[in-house]
Image 1 (tube, one colour):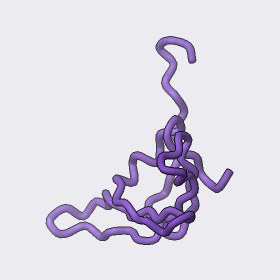
Image 2 (cartoon, helix red, strand yellow; image 1 turned 90 degrees about the vertical axis):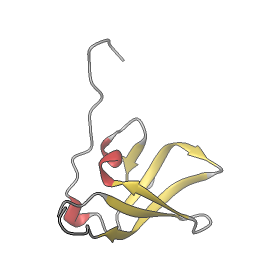
Image 3 (cartoon, one colour; image 1 turned 90 degrees about the horizontal axis):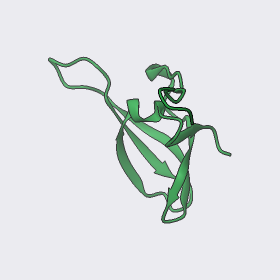
Image 4 (cartoon, helix red, strand yellow; image 1 turned 45 degrees about the vertical axis):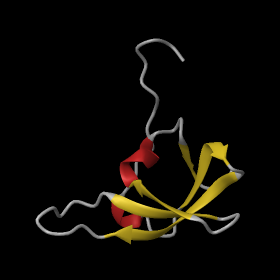
Length: 81
């Protein structure tokens, strides 16, 4: 990558995250494919969506993730590749 060039980011609509599929660019513990199984609704007074739950397809383990992290194409790719 050239210096000064920012990596492209995935354009994501938070309201369409539920049941979306994602691939980790650098799998850890053989977990590569994930599904968004839950969108955590914010507590008032913050009404901005921040957190989602990802479930690994391989072993159904879950993890919480800030949905903004999915925008980084060096970490996450949309769909199962």
